[in-house]
Amino acid sequence: MALQGPEELGEQVEEPEDLDDQDASSISPAEEITLPPGPGGEDEPEEALLLPWDRFSTWLHCICVVGFDLELGQAVEDENNPNSFSLFQKTSICYLSFPDSNSGCLGDTQFCFRFRQGSNRKPSLGCFLETTDRDAPPCLKVRGHYYGYVYFRQVRDKSLKRGYFQKSLVLISKLPYVTFFHSLLKIMAPEYFEKQEPCLEAACNDIDRWPTPHPGRILTLPIMGVVIKIRIPTCYDKPGTSQLVQSAQSDSQVSIVLPTIHEVDLFRCFYPVFFHIQMLWELVLLGEALVVMAPSPAESSDTVLALVSCISPLRYCSDFRPYFTIHDSEFKEYTTRTQAPPSVILGVTNPFFAKTLQHWPHIIRIGDMKQAGEMAKQMKVKKLKNLKTLDSKPGVYTAYKPYLNKDEDIIKQLQKGVQQKRPSAAQNAIIRRYFLELTQSFMIPLERYVASLMPLQKSISPWKSPPQLRPFIQQDFMKTLEKAGPQLTSRLKGDWIGLYRHFLKSSNFDGWFRNRRREMTQKLEALHLEALCEEDLQQRVQKHSEVETVDLVLKLKDKLTQAEREQLPVRPGTVAKLRAHIEAVILALPEDLQGILHKPSTP
Image 1 (cartoon, rainbow, N blue to C red):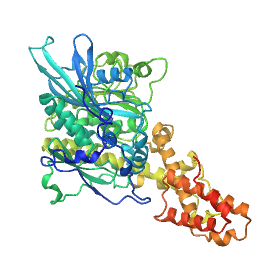
Image 2 (cartoon, rainbow, N blue to C red):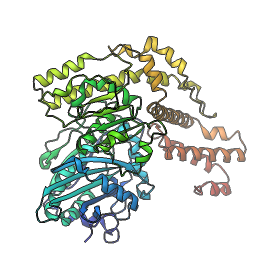
Image 3 (cartoon, rainbow, N blue to C red):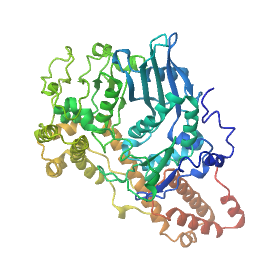
Image 4 (spheres, one colour):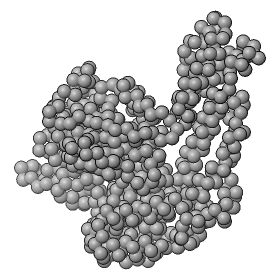
């Protein structure tokens, strides 16, 4: 029997309330605590409009079971949403859900992959996804990709022809909540391998009772008899802090508290190459083509995710694949020698890539990740000259010359921690803070200059179109660095000017500036709307003809539609106040015009 899920149960579950009564005695109900939203908006997730199984769909796209067939190879055995992917996508998922044969992963292995998504979105989820994206931090915004979270088990089994039991439980989601979904799989997968389908059906029902993952919420999520407590981060959080509050009353039934839903252990991931972390930060910042060659998908995916997060809170805007195989649909695109390697970070395990990608400019070779208390012999600084002769030793192979002088202090601090057996969590906190301060020092001058492109508020007139942002002029920005550059907040010396010149050509700058320009344009629109609210519209229309008044009403209605569609950051009550003004103006018109203007506008 196939797993029951969003597609199969759509007709059976006509009254979702009935689900709340199932297993009520054995599992605590899902609970949410909503923190105040950030500045600039009213927090109104339209959960009341969600259809049956929409709550499940806000967390997961589907759950797959991938097994090994002697004749077919990897194959999807079960899927709770069988029409969600094309045959080509399913084939790709199958290959990505198993380690390469050379990896030799015995026992249980967890990793993740990422692939491009199609246009299959439930209409009822549109409002939720837009609201979530608005309040999410840059690194957690939903982009055009799915994430696959894998729990792979390989154990000896003499009863099988192949001699091994090989199977993966895979969660497919649009959400990049890596830590959370890996923790979820640790609960679900062992139960599944023991009890098979029935427990997955129960898990699907549990997930469909969860509140939606809206930024700012603290949630307690029951799953298969266990309760997980998490907080969904927002773009208003102070970088480098955790806002998961403890509550003795609500935590009495909580089994697991996750301080983060998406951050990986940076120190463990960078440990094999931590002498080069500053250079790696530059390469990621500049959107350079990077490939991580690792012995297993777990190390490959963790290292790629660590690289992407090292420039946080700046969003990494290029493509990245935590685990990439020769069967991937982008294999030819990413390995061709007829053009320069694309701006992408790939994680690979197949030795074939050592030859296929040897023309790539930057290659990170990592061995088995040691325990944080062991000092690896391979950690000596390597001479990075020849990219073609890749040996098995860990290291960074590149001809890249860093713009900034090496920060010896952070290396000494981390080495001292290894020698003194400092806890891994403390080492992780040190390296995360180091990256955060480095990124902030680099971005503050850019933020300051872009803020200066904003027109003065006094230039906003309610009866004129909002003023335009001034253009970004590279030469003008460079002039600001002499007195207000990164030297104000960073002790590092080096060619900061060269680093900025290179960065301004990168996809990371393009993505960041597009986002900032959109935010500032919306702020101008919001200020313009607020200025209109302060005007006495009834007094103004007395000086105009009926035709001009009707034209004004139509334009104001368009402004309201834009404010709601784009969720402009207006002060609370602004939209309601302007709507009341419009209604008062309409009521002052003749009845025939009132009837026309009260008709809903066609989209």
